[in-house]
Image 1 (tube, rainbow, N blue to C red):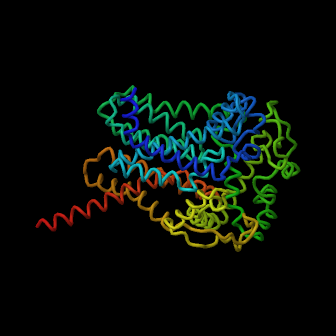
Image 2: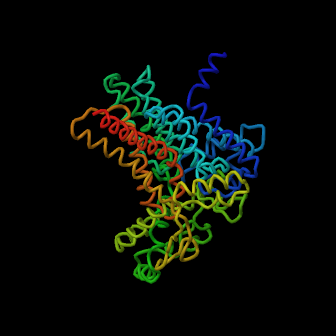
Image 3: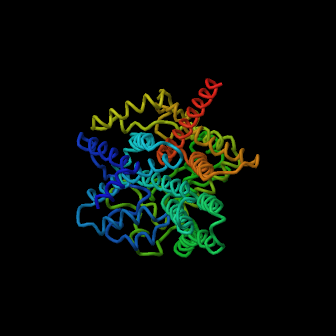
Length: 494
């Protein structure tokens, strides 16, 4: 037992998790409280009073989101003998611990010394924008930890004693990510599994390859078939059409929108706006009665928050579809509006959240100040002048932009590009090279896809990949300085 504990403590991941735990306790004891209010209004959740008492049937009837996060928190609340808030606080703390450990393991796998791997992991996971996710039951932190787990698995795939088990583990992790967050499309999942299969291609047979590919195909495909059977939509997220409407139509000047409506190019749904209560749309649509009687599908409003819609309500489905048609009509007639929205969204990616600076915890505020300096935060505005619908309820929203985040993300993405260039010159690729390709692809995918069909949520998306990008950038910067020192030493030796 003593030897086991000594071996466990010697790992960088264990030390990083221990330091992270100290920071977490310090933040908690100085005033940062777990905020469970999201449970009562969270759009991505089935109404909490339904989900927490009937998680299996509730999740089976879910169609607006992939099911895994609803299943996890609803199932834990149902099984736990303590209160929902305390249960989910423990869950989020555990996820944070695992994230710190994985960040250190990834840094070490990619070439950092154990000490520096621990330092980088603590920096990556005590970033206040990431750390605040531990104090709310949202899925951003969990997705970030899954992305770290995928990267660690890839980085150690060739050194695992059982390549078949490693590939299967990779397939399970990427599938779990896709089944948690619709941003990570099945195409992303299949691309990462193919990279893993290529890495160990000499150590596995065709049956292993087919089994690994079958995991996302059967799980994700099976869920989509379930949704087709349940509500006639073979998708992971049935509200995509309204998401697209929210990403495009607010940018269109009001007079242009009114002209398209008068010409019959868009419906009344476009004039009402996205993600409102069902009553706002009822008169614009044919009468609707839910075909299913489970409360997750049959109730339009949450009983836990009378102002919050239940977007899983069955009668929202034709509204989502109509909203998507309206958005596509605007994109076809005004492509410049779609492009303007995407440029705005890319800029918003590097806007910094204000929540940590408003925390009751002096430790959280200290971390926010420290990271603000490291991020080179610069004051600015997100302007919506000329838009038909200012999405923040005002024409300008003052924000800080993290300038060093742009460098960090650029380095992380360019790492994969560099590897692909080397491959084009017929140079052999190492496991780390393939890991850089996978992480760069994941980071670029998150930024680009997050900007293509969303408006205003980009900074929240970024927090999911901040830990991964921080570790990768730290590895690259360390390697750069190491090469400089080696060249200087060689010059002196001559």
